Image (cartoon, rainbow, N blue to C red; front, side, top):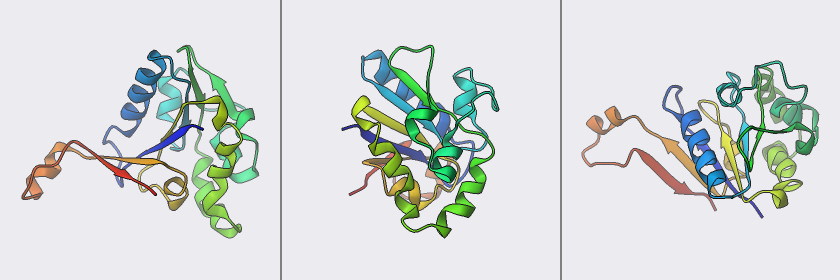
Length: 166
């Protein structure tokens, strides 16, 4: 069973994609089988791995909106042991359509369960203000913080806050 981690924050520009890619590449370098799932409409994770938006026929949007099997959307990358499910701007509409379905909170979890035996780690690059759908399937939830947020706190916090999800 794969260990699923969602990387999120309520705002953009706080290195969610960089964290996802760096962590994924480091795990792959240690010979772990890693699947990165790009859930951000900007598709920066996909772009960082050399995939132009619109190049992939099947993306995370197809998985969420049309119930396309996740295995169809998985692409090999140039990094050994590192696979990708790319994204595009269509993923934005998933947040509008999913709540209309029954069991919408588990749509992504159900898709992941069919491929998780092929991976050791699955990392989700979430858009700003990630919805409950991402939280419901994660074993771990990483929230990226900017260092300047420490100025507003009376105590020191680490740059990355890790919260376990039960």
